[in-house]
Image 1 (cartoon, helix red, strand yellow):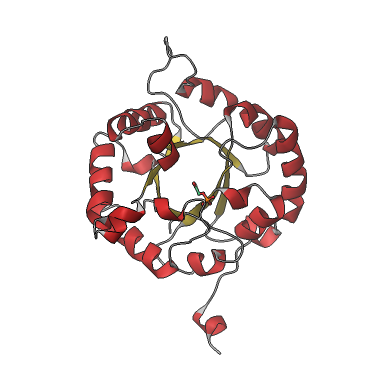
Image 2 (image 1 turned 120 degrees about the vertical axis):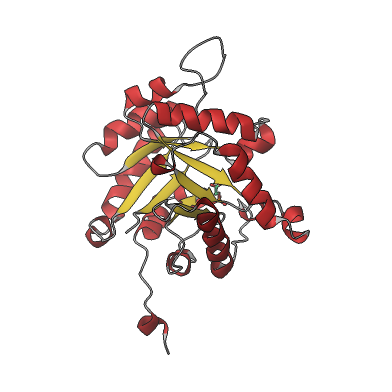
Length: 254
Ligand code: PGA
């Protein structure tokens, strides 16, 4: 059975003081039933570099894992402003987002450097969360499937599928409030799984996930979890996302 991963991506939000405040409100709002659920619900907080040490410290023993939002492919060197794998593992970080569309769009990251970053993460026993997804224009031109398959094929040479998470994040759904319909997210994730031939690989959906749509998304058989941006900033809302309700066909029937 694949694990369920509920990951928050704070992006460039929250000082250390704000991170502490979030955790004070978030932890008590988690239901014991969702923390101890089967399959296990792994909570991951992907926070800014400056918050990592504090969030690792404050979540110790809670079962919440901590992730970074990027890493450089070299272990050290003259790369001003960059952070390496050993710097993250020393802090107790376990996950790292790689290839988020904002990194690709605003900071010039390419599939080639995404591949190098994935390899660096795995070399240091971090689990990378690789983001892929199409733009609105690509979707309208019917290029969704071929684009995503191309992104995967360029990003994954030499990468171990045993220590990897993929997040399908349609760019047009990120931060826009326009969630991809649950059935469509399920379809694309199914295609990714089929293409990679890796049944055990957790594949998440990301893009305007909120408390109001989490139950429907998590009812889809191919969706193993979510990567949540804006709605992960609010402790009550993110706790409701973690505490998603399992919809059964019986419960959904009139
Ligand atoms: P959003 O962001 O939930 O704010 O749409 C998702 C993401 O970028 O990972």
